[in-house]
Image (cartoon, rainbow, N blue to C red; front, side, top):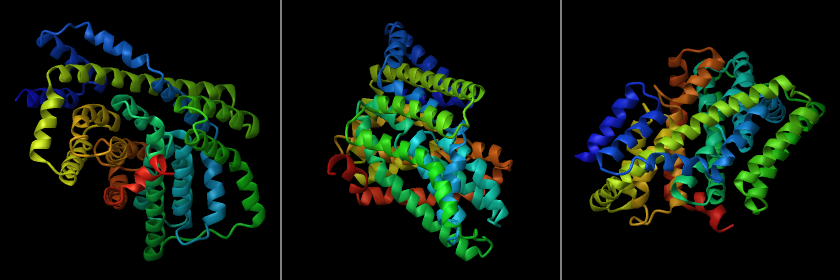
Length: 424
């Protein structure tokens, strides 16, 4: 009863328009006071959240992605991919997916990925006869690769909440990320063939391929550097973010010469705004999490789940259903910070690997990013493409199905997730 009352109060605040950070933190403080606990736990929780080395990666990755976004790197990546695969059936769609995957490997942000690639891909695909709803849906879904293919900001937060290795989470995301890219590519090619409306781009000459490839090569090198450095233990995720930011400055400022002081200032301000938002939500969730732990809500829910859902597949099915419903009205980071502290105690009794569960959770968050009415990527693509929300929402459903198929395959074949971090 207490659990339902607390969750009901939280959802009432969120639906009433209270910002997520203040809804979580405020309700947590009220619960501490009503439970007779010291309210000083709230500022202590805030301080312990922000004073964390792992979370330092968040502003650094955001700085890097914003510098690359403002520096036009997405345009260069799309041009290079188009030069190599644009003449294939559905070649522009394939180039879009590949560009999203590559930019995801250097940004860690779904919004940045969708906005960057969408700016250049939407006009190109529309001119070639691709149905508008398909184009918008592809970009909205392709942008979600930004939080699955490492580096990933939600994975950093998940690792912070569960005290799991962020490096292992990053490595675990590579297999599912490549699988999802492959499914998107196959669907795009099949759609282009069946629709008969999608015109192929003319085959690029070797000179065009070489020129576009050379311009995109520094960005590809940056993605390889980050993944290689994390995989071999050359640097931590936080150090990788710092190295990536410096490399982004060199690529856009010295090699491509697209970064000016004005553009850099815009990138810093945007990164600062997003960082403050994320850290406020994380801090509010920390206070809320502390309060519900003292009320023994996670422990009670864990006992309820293990008593009623004593097999892993049934537990995962219920969690997936809950997350799909929550994704209709909660944004991704809020879902993670509300649900993970509650669900984490149930993983060990059911024999579920927390690294595997983290990837499962991130894929379900991807689904939330493209489900109306609160899917953030829908709003990003709506703004970039100057489209109606209905157009964007109509185009994402096939890709949403492909994401759920990826979840199923990862459950049936856990090595898709666990092979690289634990066996390679």
